[in-house]
Image (cartoon, rainbow, N blue to C red):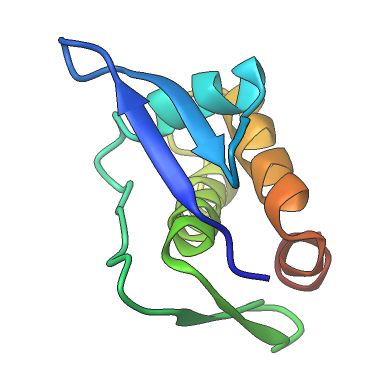
Length: 115
């Protein structure tokens, strides 16, 4: 299912709301998004296409839209750093916010690619 997204920012550029198919995202998802986009490994993908994403352990793959891919990619990059014992910032709470955001958007992506 393809979603319609609207990212609403305040005057300073901080995301204050994310609208998905006309509904507001939860505060936790917006909080996680705001922390994730501040990391150097966050990438906002091109909204004009879909992306094939892979589970590096099982080889499972799915085509995700740009927003889902941005979340998935960030989660995988964060987790790589966690595995290598880097100083993790943001915390596990942000990782949880983002992975559950993906679960809310696309359960198949969460279960096949992350969980």
